[in-house]
Image (cartoon, rainbow, N blue to C red; front, side, top):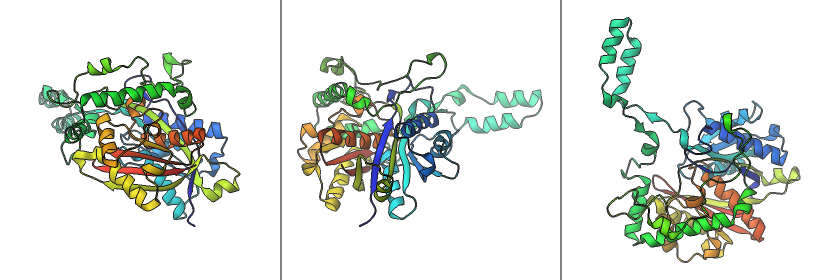
Length: 411
């Protein structure tokens, strides 16, 4: 039988809305905090780790191959290796399945995997017109030459391009991610009321699950004047959320005719997740009892303009390969990029019991740090399987650019 990957343990930082508590912490520091907390909680010897594999979409320019920076700053030995992976919203899943492929091919047996995103620190960019002018200014010698170079600048040269907005726009379809959700809302005739009701349930479940979710979370101690006041829980779940409050929000992507709002969409979020994973035989030899194993996975492509439907072909492909689909698993996690998107997936797949889907809330309430979300879904599902005494879970996400991802987890 091929060697299987098991997930021994995991931990994550709180997830916080971009621009809030974690905004001052860059991606490499958020990742270091998660890995350090994982090693502290497990007491695992970092010298036994073959490689660190982290998903990250908005990779920081001052920490290239951010997984390597995280690993070294968390105290892993220089002899270990690290790789950063990127599959948009499925980057956290990609880290897990890349480790599984390493195990299957005999290239390592112990890994720390996960994902990280500091969406607060995605930079603003100068327009392309400014680059040659800055270059000319740098080459200029003498006061006269510098004044001449400066005189070439125009106010438009200083109007920033918002890198985060560019990154959330698909270059093939030309639609941003919210606009793709509007496509599905119209195609599947999903009303604003249904979307808001779905969003409200996400918040209600996340609030009810605070104690359970706290088992996943490590405290984050902030630098500077905030020192001594750690961030202990997710920022976004709102106890006072209501349908009336959600109904007051204006459409965010189609101002005149749309139904997708900030309230029924996932939040732009900062956060990190770290998982200790290894070959099943290695875990046994070390006397470790894993939370669960990766029993299968699938990635599938779809129309970029309907990227939110990605979980549909991925879950069907996974079921064809493993025999396990929505009808015979104990839990299902579908990332809540947008309420309209999840509702469209549910209509396409058929009935999924409400008491098995996103039972602790989802990204609408918790946030969606894109590089970390897949690892968070994996951790949340395995912990909930343990609490319920269940055996099987499917975790899935749509992927910007027109893909879907699905993992089968076994306790």
